[in-house]
View 1 (cartoon, protein in one colour):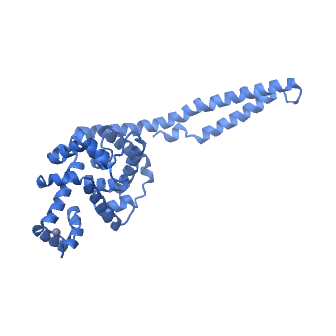
View 2: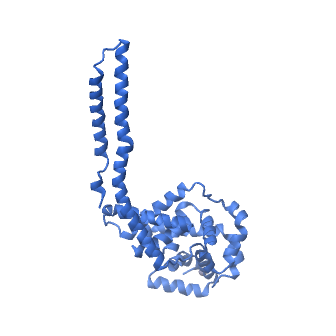
View 3: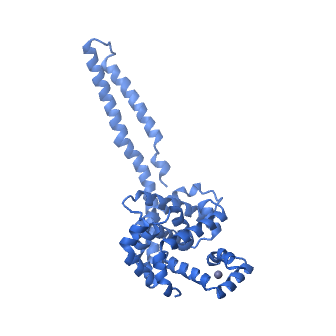
Length: 150
Length: 171
Ligand SMILES: [Zn+2]
């Protein structure tokens, strides 16, 4: 085999997967060809510096595993909490402001005489039923804590 | 989990080149994997699946890291030429030190993303061609070709430093 064809196999040998026959050929060539030896040596030198092997102590692995499990557990809890947190933070104020807006809208308009509105009371009840319906929608869309908690 | 900790952490370190960020990323990856475990169908090996999550996550981190400079070769050589020279003329064991990891990260950032990924999978994690092909969802020939081009380009980028280093070569 020539130097050119060997060169293509050179890194296959370095990386591992070569048939027995090919391995012998490449190794045989390497003993006679300084250029190929140099190519492999140079790559080894690059790899050793840019991809140094890592060692991790058992203690750091223990710490890592504990930390991950902690996060898995607390994220399950958080998912439950955040569903309720979301309802409290957004849905309640939304319902509240819808009710207020409805009340303001219908209590002002009748005074102008341009629009014969239903009474403020009726408006309030229709708005609050609309708002609570949308509120329910939100709650259904979010996860209930029971579903998420382990 | 222990069995995979070293692999994932090694991969993250090579991709991110920063211990704190790598540790954080590795945690995120395991939490993510744990949660999507029900989605793991078993049509790839578990480690391939985990490597895919890891690759995507590291790429996300790299993309979000806007402050991180991707170095042009010229800028890097000008700024860090002496340091790179020291790195390549010193004992390889010193490369694991943090300041050298940082430098290694800068050197690797001169490569296109897919070259960096494939080199990391092969060199840092020791994946076989078949495993790389499954992780990156490409053919064996594509793996061999890309790996060879990536090595060539990296050596080409480092040519000034490697030539001087010829004497050191065999450890
Ligand atoms: Zn040769």
